[in-house]
Image 1 (cartoon, rainbow, N blue to C red):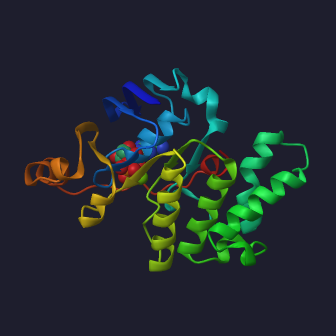
Image 2: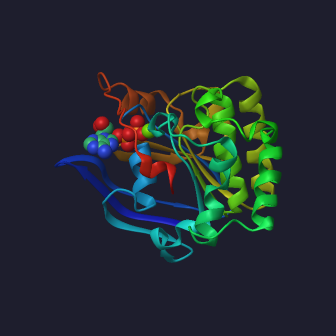
Length: 247
Ligand code: ADP
Ligand code: MG
């Protein structure tokens, strides 16, 4: 379903991703793991065509960046401008506007889809709240609702478990299981190494290059953790991008 072929990204001459190739099958729950600065967000953004890259990314055999509407993307929290004056309901509605055409009013069907999605993540009652006034977990659930309302077959989620509460974690895991049961494909970024990684069907271990691509048990070895995480201090990237908000 998803084919990444020889993907490389340079930022001002420095390689953030080096010749990454992988494939993801329909209905898989895949964890993309690696330390801060490993290139996880870059890989997701390059797949979507949000940063310039070399290589190819195919979704159902065609370039993915031309099918963005068919793919739901939940950006990393640190890359979102939480001061942007917009309500939770408007965030959840965003993909609908893009589907219908930016200058058309959302149809009542689109509004219904969004309401159902917000209800599914227990956020409908807070839909008029400015997004910046919600807790981290609530914000993450609103973005998940946006992805659900889009009805996409492929969901790319960047660090959805960072900075959230237990209720949101449980709710998200439940939604992931339901989505998988519906045959949807999920790629979820994660920088923490731990037992929770066993929830994935498969792990992709990244640190600029793809270091491992196998079952959690096979990837979570001492050698792999040394190779990926044991390389001195990592520099994390903190700039926010409005572009993430609008895709
Ligand atoms: P991860 O998501 O795994 O933490 P990123 O993809 O954010 O990693 O970053 C990979 C590397 O690329 C880091 O060294 C980061 O500082 C750098 N980087 C990310 N985005 C940019 C950018 N827009 N401009 C310059 N360097 C960037
Ligand atoms: Mg990241």
